[in-house]
Image 1: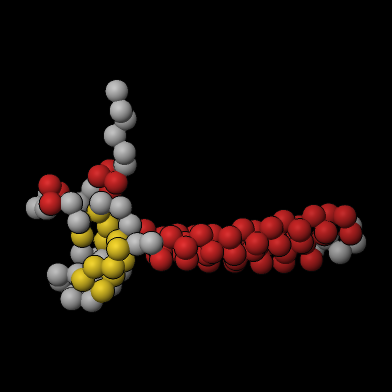
Image 2: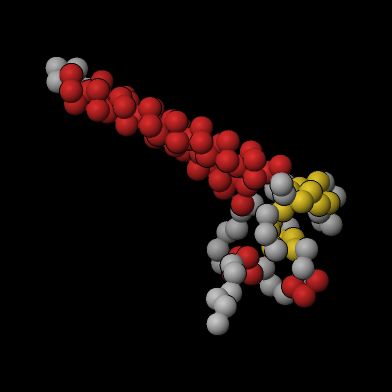
Length: 117
């Protein structure tokens, strides 16, 4: 069975990974000290990755402000929900705000919009 994670935490993890990837790219650039153009290209790519991470953090921060705070029925802590179904940030309990989905097995496909014919 696939391990699910809260959507907000997944996006934050991606942004953190971008920071580390940017640092690694810049570190690789140090090995090209004798070729300044190649070194500058690696340094710029690393900075672009870090700036991209900043953009992702800003975007998820704005998105997080629009989420619906709910209380988890399992751990009774507050968590934020994105979409129709999500996972509790603290205890990984499946959550839904759609009464038609209550009692059904958790599936992230419920968040996707169905094609209109």
